[in-house]
Image 1 (cartoon, rainbow, N blue to C red):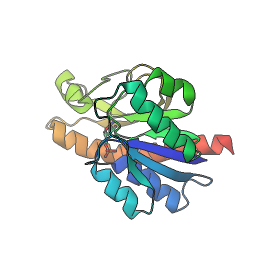
Image 2: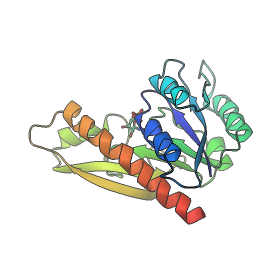
Image 3: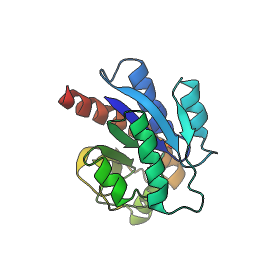
Image 4: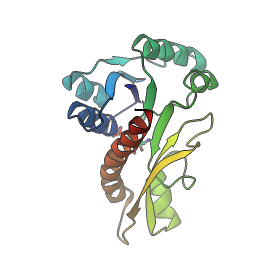
Length: 189
Ligand code: GRF
């Protein structure tokens, strides 16, 4: 299965997926392309150093749909069958969703439907929950919405700050995304 990964920043989930693919831990999967909507995304360098084609398709002042058209065509040129959003900070357009219907997935740092949107870890701290986690889910036209594929939980410690919680949670996310892909790819084979 050819995977295309969309990022906007650090790219630790992308690296985790790419390393799992390279080491044969997601049999049958290949990362064909990594696309960032920001030229400054540190994840671009990490992808390139793993030998993965890494490109930028800037948002500029374009509409969501115009921007997505260029991304769709790049994904198609690379024969991408599954799109993984990994810290991609832009809502995808209805055109994007219908082009890759049922073949776009995302990771979010909360137990959806709790705490959608930005700063999910801060939202968890402020809500005073004892437990949060991460969710890998199919992407539809709504933000952080769509059928859940896999959720993993983590305890919120009494002295946790947004930073300490985020640091623990990202490690769980990195593992959970790979696990979800193992399940999905397995189902296709
Ligand atoms: C992760 O917390 C992810 O759940 C959220 O954005 C962050 C991206 O981190 N959507 P990274 O770029 O994968 O390191």
